[in-house]
Image: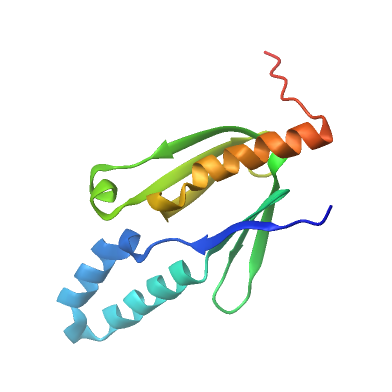
Length: 139
């Protein structure tokens, strides 16, 4: 079975609101304009791609780095929606994994309407069933 894209998107620019306001106040110094542009590009170029088997996070403006997480390694999901995020309809999702290189994956400022957490959880259950993998915690 071929791997299919379930969801693809990037973080909302709302997460940069504080930086944009500060840079707007000090734009007469010229340097803050470049700082705001850099933050905009960094956010725009960080792409989250949820497929039927993996979560891929690609980031970088000039050179790209792609981090891949196999979905059967996901242990737990935690959805966080701070007060200001609720007003603009975005949420953060922390993914706890059994992957040694990336024990935590933090997906920032994803629109709440997407339902990314539910889509991720459903794909994790499907892939675990297909691969016959179960999570075992030994303490």
